[in-house]
Length: 325
Image (cartoon, rainbow, N blue to C red; front, side, top):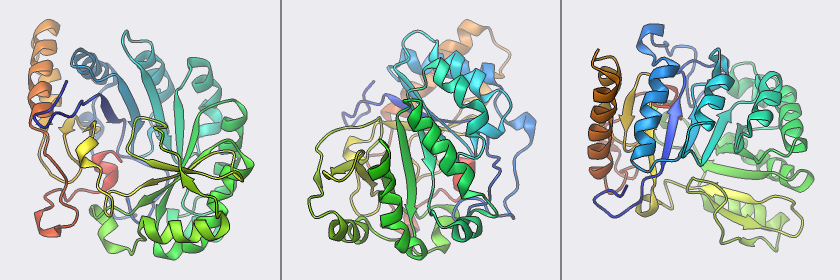
């Protein structure tokens, strides 16, 4: 389905939980409380919403959190979603710490991709950024997923304090067939309290090490990343630069929080409460029709662009784990 700006909306980021086993400083430090279990959508309710989304042409799903793998049954849910008629892709974003135990199930179900959040390869810095995470576990999971033939992407948020990690992270794409993507720090939630770097800063560092780094000119997933290639790399280097290179004109996504709030744009606190519909007590057919109706309206009214450059206009003040990454 197209919105009123002519963009095709075919991608839903679906948060399974706002909970996480890490406490990354730009996402959910210790002080952030989690919502109650009853407020979170049940898996069958999420699948109802996904069926309605499919009827509207949304056929690509990204599973997020919090950390999605802390929720019991996450792999079974992804398998059920992947098996639905019309689903084109199901991918996962994870911090990687719990990935080893579910990787065999994900490979068996045919997961279409796994994005692993990793901002530093320095063990002490990683632990400080994440509230005690063990980077060695993440690296082992990353390597095993790549060996298993999974389409792996590393997501690294560009922070001023991790600038020295740009080249070590990029080197992962030299030793493994993975893409390494650098993401500009978004001015949402605790992201406003830290200093980030721009794409241009990282690209300047990378080009000194990889002089032949050139734009790949290809799409490598469902999201907005732009990619670069070098003869020295097995994978690509990517950038998601929402601040300095806004990609709103081609935005194809919606977000569904773990509590069932459908967000057309990360920047604004506008959206639709789908939990109220799936818990209305109406017949399944009526719920299905109601979901399609309100989701179609939300798609059509999707804002033309975000307002990250105008902080006073940002109406979304929740943390990233509450929004869904």
